[in-house]
Every structure is written in C-alpha cells, then in structure tokens.
Image 1: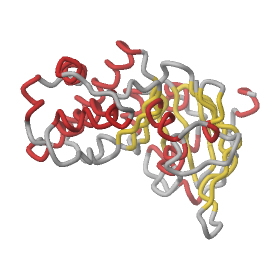
Image 2: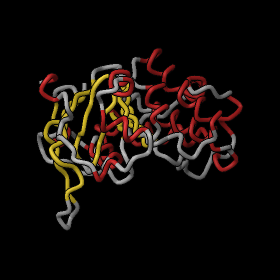
Image 3: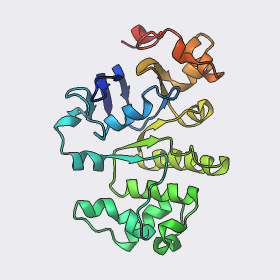
Length: 254
C-alpha cells in the first residue's frame, strides 16, 4: 500500500534529518516507527501526508507518487492523529464533521453516532464541548475525526504518550479493533518497545535519520542477534553506535 523509496529530507538550512530511508507497508498492516528521540520518526511520519514535503518519487501510495496528488485529497486518504488530540473549539460533533465539510460533504447525525461507536464513545458525547473531555476521551474523538474522512492509511504520532496506562491500553485496543473491522493500515510512531510488541506487525528502527533495521516485530524484538535494537530496548544510547543503513538483514529483504 505504501512504499518509501530512498527518501532523504533536510531542513531549509541543509541539515539532513532523513537519509536514504526505504521500507514498505502492506495493506492492513500496523507498522511501528521506533527509535531514540531526534531519530527522525515524526519527521518521517509527516512526509507521508506532505506536512513535510518529500522529494518527488520517494513516497508512493497505492502505486501513485504522493507529490503528484492534490494535498487535500491525499490528507483525506492518509489521516493523522497527533500526540495531543488538538480538538477544535466547539462540540464533539463539530470536530467530527470538520474534515468532510472541507470536501463539501455534511455528515448526518447518524454518521456521527456511528463514528463515535467505532471509537467506543456513546452518542451522548456528540453535543458535549470538546474542552470538557478527558485526555483519553479527547484522543478517541481525534480518531473519530480522522476516520470521518474514510482514510485508507492512518498515521499515529505517539497518540498515547500523554495518557495514563489504562487509557493507553484503550487506544491500543481501539486501533487493533479498527484494523480488524475496517482493514485499516497504520504507521505508528512510538518510543515504547512493549507497545510496539503489543500492536505492530512490523517495526522500523530509525537511528540518526537512517533505517537501522526493519522487519517483523516479533523477529526484531525477540531475536538475540538484533544487537542494536536490543541495546536500545535496555536504555543504551544507540546514537553513539555505528549504524548499518537498512539493518543487518537488508540483503535478505532485497
């Protein structure tokens, strides 16, 4: 569904943030982006719906170069949920209706109720002010708002990092349920090794803007010979270690 081909991205001043990044995301998969702070995870995620503009030919969605797609159409197909729910002023219903309204489509009350049901909230929330919600409730509304555009791919930028453990598990179960019911494909940024183990099919390890390894999550996290990811998991500063671009099994995948 999604293919990143030798993506390189730099700041306006020329500082490289991503270097020759390549990996694939299959339809219906949940892929976690794992790595230390400053490794380029959120930068990479933002290139996938052109919040950061990638070079032409480096990001492909269903076989189409995303830089050739209208941005509004791309962001309907590729939704995003951020670390903070960032809900707008107004009611929950107004937040859910926002995206479709940009495309001149008005959601009915029944459609809004269905979206709330998909994220595990009662229809009574529709008329509640967004500012009155708890952190976990607000994040579920953010998911409903993203789903209102009927995306094919959902980008998740540490959506549980500000939540308590119970709310974190609720969001994880929500995403797994959405994948099971809707076939939704997700790319999920996290620092949390155990979260990656719980939710993802594949994991990409980024270190210093380079793909240090990627593959099946269980394989990467459970095999002793994956030295770099094991050392990251126990808290070692892997940014000081040598990184082999593409990881130790790049040749096998090729």
